Image 1 (cartoon, helix red, strand yellow):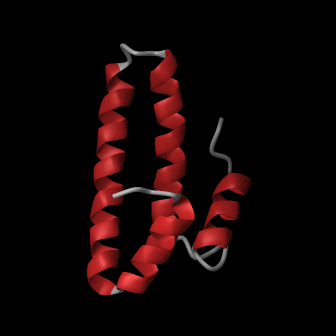
Image 2 (cartoon, one colour; image 1 turned 180 degrees about the vertical axis):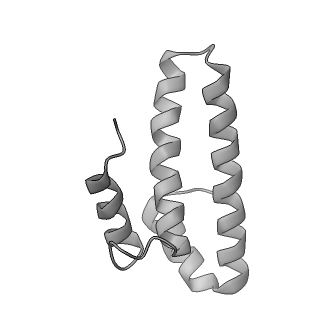
Length: 89
């Protein structure tokens, strides 16, 4: 599987502050971004996998809502995570 415990803890340690801090908005956005990139690569090979496409759209929506929350709450954290993850807007 592409998303193991070690990969998750590494993502949260890098972006969430600590490996156990799984509730931070930055950590969740980073995890969603990792999953979105994986699903995007899968869909490039499997164009007719519509269930995965729907999952991808839902993930992008979740990430967008978290980014909107972060933008409203603290613009500096928002700008930092956008720059760090290379998410364009």
